[in-house]
Length: 217
Image (tube, rainbow, N blue to C red; front, side):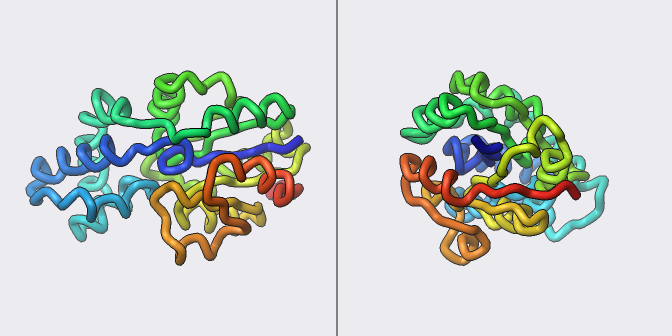
């Protein structure tokens, strides 16, 4: 029995359409041209402030807050519903819960919108906790919260994601991680993960083999 921590975008669901369209909703309102959708896929997963800082070259906090706020105007009303659950994911979650694993979410989405996405797919019942970020917090902060939570840290823990931000955060707290190849990451990013899987059905075995106890920090 383990504590299994899932990323959301690119790990459980294909969220590209809603995120890309919401970025391109925000850019013209900030005075910038839209960007080709295939070029924006690299920004699915990292925090929004990182996305807009890279797209505009502006680092000022007030500007980034404005950019995130405009992005969320569309994403909170429309974009989150432009999500598709990956084939096989629901079966994996159900099986993990039947084996008495604790499942959690660690996402760069805000907590409330992450819960809406889970509800959209009818999979919220599988998750004991949902942890989300805002512009001031990083994914490693969420992992630290869970490591220090006595309801979760009595079991071996593992992070499952698709981007290097997931694996680097896990490495920072000495937590093993699994990279899923059906998301938005690439081979270079996967080098930071403990293990790589190509299909959802491979997750069960990989979790059993790689989860380990992580000390409180």
